[in-house]
Length: 229
Image (cartoon, rainbow, N blue to C red; front, top):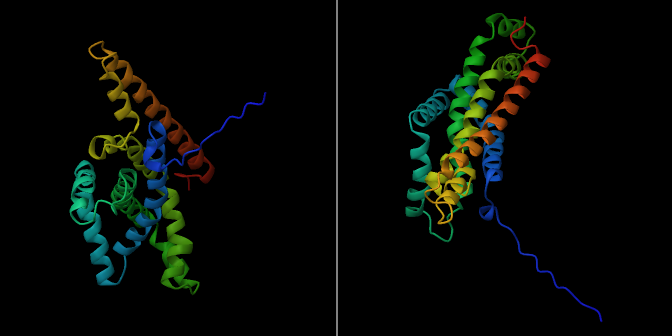
């Protein structure tokens, strides 16, 4: 006799993901998107055009003055007052959007500090060679600034990585801390003290992730000669 086994594959959506993979996904996508946006905001804040400088400065100061958790709560609650429920994006998309916009403001200030650290002689030398302001910025000052701020940038990205746990509390995203605490509240584990083991395991995961990012940052700094003249 021949036995046929039918397999049914169901399409997995992003909102059906869970665990540490969600934290990693939110962090990586937010870092990739916030970095170029932050660079543009930093350049905009130093722009000679008043309207561009005003808009960039206003955005940076407003975002930096707002608590991240409050912004996540607004993304989870207030958005539904303006967008129909069937058209509203999922919680993971909202989390990535908030983390990107929030981190970009801090990246902008870090990059702006790096631009200010570049010696004025570099700019004057570029202009002496006949380069316009844009070429001086993108070919001379910006590369040096980005190299100088690598430690601060990595520190900001590590902070973003750890802050992804806020998405669970604010948007009910099934990230690793949310799942860990939910497991300990089940009847089989309730009142047995497993919450400490759960939190310790989650903390270990984030420590390992942060340590890896820090070590890679040190390797990159050494390769690029950050802090050396």
